Length: 304
Length: 258
Ligand SMILES: Cc1cc2nc3c(=O)[nH]c(=O)nc-3n(C[C@@H](O)[C@H](O)[C@H](O)COP(=O)(O)OP(=O)(O)OC[C@H]3O[C@@H](n4cnc5c(N)ncnc54)[C@H](O)[C@@H]3O)c2cc1C
Ligand SMILES: Cc1cc2nc3c(=O)[nH]c(=O)nc-3n(C[C@H](O)[C@H](O)[C@H](O)COP(=O)(O)OP(=O)(O)OC[C@H]3O[C@@H](n4cnc5c(N)ncnc54)[C@H](O)[C@@H]3O)c2cc1C
Image (cartoon, rainbow over all chains, first blue to last red; front, side, top):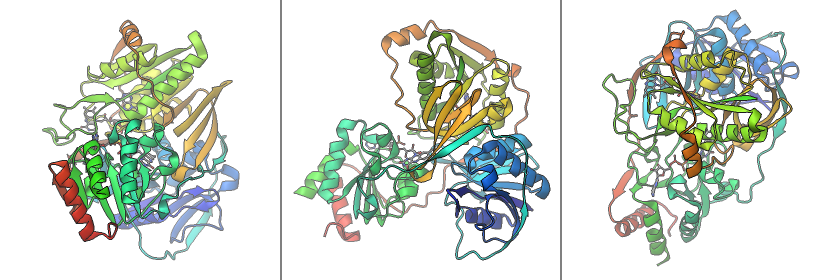
């Protein structure tokens, strides 16, 4: 069995997620080859063929060219699996490659179950195994689902990869993340508000609880998107990654992108009216209650 | 200008999901359905562009599914879409993202859409494939995960959200397709007069058989709840008691209250 792994290159650096793809290939027992639009000074420490296209020529984000480069490498390697990270790069590029090859794509794979690809469904409340049609399959892997251990120390066999054709999307540049006015990564206690608090007017209820604990106010993304609190309070893949001594999630369902930002906290308390909310999977204590009733009661006890 | 926005109807994610009798998806009974959250941002952006372009512009909203998806279409019409297309399919069952995309592309082909909006992913499936695949099938330029959108002079300037809050700024000439991320805008609530007006708007019904020419490339083998690993304590009951219980647990197991 053969797996072709697609590396991701951002702002001049190879991203580490390539090693998660290697771990997945290891689970499959597949031989590894790789594609990277990058440069020779900065390649994965992995044994196997590396088809290397020059990032200076093709750019870091140039979907039609990257698609054609991957397809070209697929033709050379004839792999069974074509593996991307499920990242802003991978979910953008993978369907283009799958469509061009007219093969199945299975997105955000979290595991292997009897040789079938396992994916999450319904905000991680359910799982699904997917059976692709015979032949090649494109997969994207959930970040962190396949972990690798230790220092990598292989050396790839590099061959240059080229295609012709023009770009249909023009890349203008990167815009840095907004400056933060609170540094949640330093907080020992974080009390976060989720959409379950209902409306902006209820933010003070959660802020009061945070204050009673002597902690900082955090938030899930919808609360930030709706403008209830500043982006600097957002926890998750597109916010901050925190690991306080205590994390209290108030009306937060526990989507994977939120969990990625807080699951390493020492102790997690979740308050949710839905007993089955996926946040329960990582919580040390799940309080099944209306947070708008429970939070003031707890605040009063903490103050009293 | 012609614009198309594609919406999927999904169950409320706070529902309890029961596996259906064939064991490959959830049972539809007892679920409340709504517009996929990501698609609400797509509709709002499309409506804003429609307003910017004025009456020479036509905005169509399309959804594939059983009769209940008309509710989703009606909401989008009340938000400001001009006309609806309901691709009737009682058997969305067993259609994979490839087929859904090929149905949308078959409908759109030759109709001259300058811009197509989709969500970046669905809430129940989350494949994040349909939009990009439609663009590939139609040969349109495409960018995903938009948190910023501007249109001028035949081109879209888009902000793509990358990890850690970094954004990638790109430019695409029309015809183009964009997939919309959470927070792209603040979707409007339909007003009562607009809900009344929407009742008069056309919803074209198209049988799926007339558009479907592709076999699935993947099937669901099984559907099940994840094994519970979390050994956490679950507490229910009166809020005052719960507070006392939580405080004693925190005193016992953490150092934060000492
Ligand atoms: C009641 C029901 C039963 C189902 N049963 C099965 C099953 O048994 N097996 C199975 O494999 N699949 C099943 N499906 C799901 C299947 O039809 C998927 O929805 C489809 O494959 C699209 O994948 P996705 O939702 O991951 O799309 P994504 O690629 O995540 O969606 C991205 C975007 O594409 C657009 N889009 C997606 N779907 C539609 C649509 N229907 N109409 C208009 N625009 C759309 C939206 O803009 C959306 O934001 C079922 C769906 C329903 C509603
Ligand atoms: C690429 C990408 C990046 C993302 N990045 C992030 C990120 O960095 N951070 C992030 O948080 N999300 C992120 N998301 C969004 C994520 O997928 C979820 O949509 C989001 O985390 C949901 O927020 P929530 O839990 O507050 O809301 P919901 O999922 O709507 O959950 C609300 C919860 O509140 C509960 N509830 C409702 N009422 C009450 C009540 N009265 N009392 C108690 N409980 C109640 C409900 O049962 C439910 O569980 C990202 C998504 C994508 C696609």
